[in-house]
Image 1 (spheres, rainbow, N blue to C red):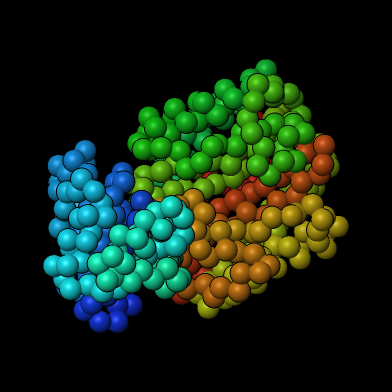
Image 2 (cartoon, rainbow, N blue to C red; image 1 turned 45 degrees about the vertical axis):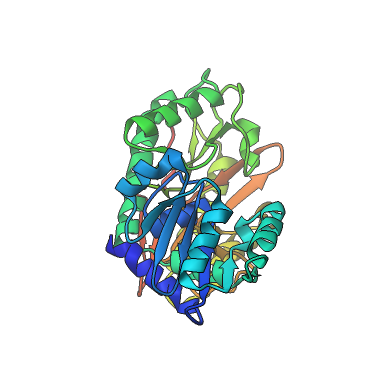
Length: 361
């Protein structure tokens, strides 16, 4: 309960006077501030109150699972909002432009302006929410840690399926089943379980392609626990590994572990990216590493901060990021190794406990 209360109070800092209100409509942000998932409503913050607005389908559950706010049922969202605006004497409402469809924006303009209420759609509210969500609390870290543990348990078990004659799709289906069996509410994204030449595709899609001896097999996987995501990639070899594949694997491993050593509070995220990229470039494969080195993880699988050549974000304690360099040789094979870590004052805490030494199954 205190987490949601503190978050709302922190968000209130952008309210300039008691006639301003903040309207949160992004479903994940609504959960972040209210504690209630799966709402199609909104979260309204004034200088002295907070409301979770839901329709009849969610009222009972919202009252049971929300914290630090009053649950208000509506038939028409705009009608109920106007009633609350009138009650609090609101003349200006800040909205999330990133979460509002153009048609909804025009509806807000029409409905609220008719009551003398201005709609502000600049980036203030979005930025304030992002700045809060980018730093994870102890409770959030525990949820991410649990999601990672579920992922690893499923990974170890599914290695029994990674063998010649088995399809990529079979491994993906089994992984999803195992994660949910072990407590995941969902998978973090469409799982990537690819083999052979397809491992050169950073976001390859599992199909009926069959695993063969000598293949690399890449698994980019994650679970969701209590709304929070995990993200991990491991590349394993099937039965045997050629010298070329082993050499590429070791270059990526060196890039990944060296980049991890650069992670700590106060470091620019571009430094982490450059550390990994320089090692791969010096080995002659710079053009084969075309994506960023990492990204933030939390209630969304991709959050701030970006760990890229252009990010420029200074890492701070409590941020959760991935470090996932790769080398992709077109129509041959690819390697990616990814860990998810918590940024600390003097370094990082790695959520992943699985060895990164090359596994041959």
